[in-house]
Length: 155
Image 1: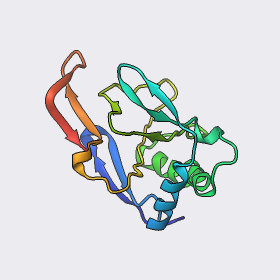
Image 2: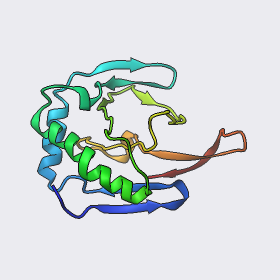
Image 3: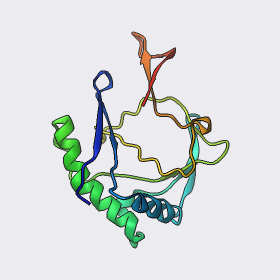
């Protein structure tokens, strides 16, 4: 799975958008199909409502393509992230899968966790279009770190 990825840098956000993580579209389709077979549990609070798997790195007997994806993220992509951000990552990348259905949501939030320096999203939605929502938005904020209404960047 070693191929040329498309990388776009957003310097103001200290963010990279990486396309073509998987070399072939058939791998993406197979990954999406196998992810849908995993066990998801509902999670909900005032900031979100959706379904979530456990940490994929801790699930035994993952479907083969999901297992290969987890390995890819913990090897090749981990190295890519270290090179782009010039950091040393933790030895293991934690990752989960989320499933959203009509009515589910994830509100704006500060994504700080003590054991997370980098967060990533890998979309596997079939037939997705902009009207479905789900854009990754980064909001400008004021001096009190409150989001400024209407001032954001879509990625």
